[in-house]
Length: 291
Ligand code: G1P
Image (cartoon, rainbow, N blue to C red):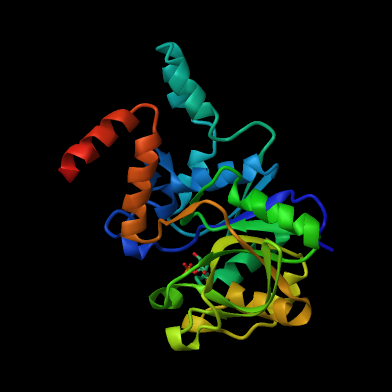
């Protein structure tokens, strides 16, 4: 049963982030900023905006900065209060909104995304939950996870975010087989993780947003290792898709692949152009560059 309120979101953040070395040698990649806000905070804000109250982080070694980020910063706050820097104090304090719970579980060995989600099981109750991959930054009027929750309410099935991809991109995505389209939704009958272009069953790739049923843990527990020798969430979803169908939502909005240097740079430019403090000057600078 999927049509219940989504109360919890899981953020797998144990990855090494080696694509961003040396920046990620001692800093979690999820803490890299788009303008002035770390990637993970965008994802948490998206979940908060969708009414989610419990944030579960699946962390690993060298990820303490994430816990500190969503905690009280006494020294900083006292200093800002003393200097009457009220706006900055407000920014620092609103990182962890009131009434939102932050929970941390460890993934001590990097055995894949499916395994990371499995690590969150003790922090969840027997109800559907959201998963957000902070690398996928999605700018949209209705938050991506909210778009998925609407589909979960309508269909009572597991939900995945989708976007159209090019043949040369298939090796970076989970790709679905299309059973049928139902209005704005696509019913997936199967999923494959990172296929070669010639093996890709469609041009629809999975974006890092999911609404998963609690039953997925039984499926993950029985999975053999998949692509890259890892326990893949895509393989668990393939089992659910073959059983009852999984619903794909073509996400509205613009997605930035902030797991890649190009996507990360593009996001900084796009968000920078809209930023109240630097937007006007950045646009002027970019215009001058283009001449
Ligand atoms: C993960 C998933 C993949 C999905 C992608 C979206 O891959 O395994 O199915 O399409 O996120 O960003 P990763 O990018 O972690 O290799």
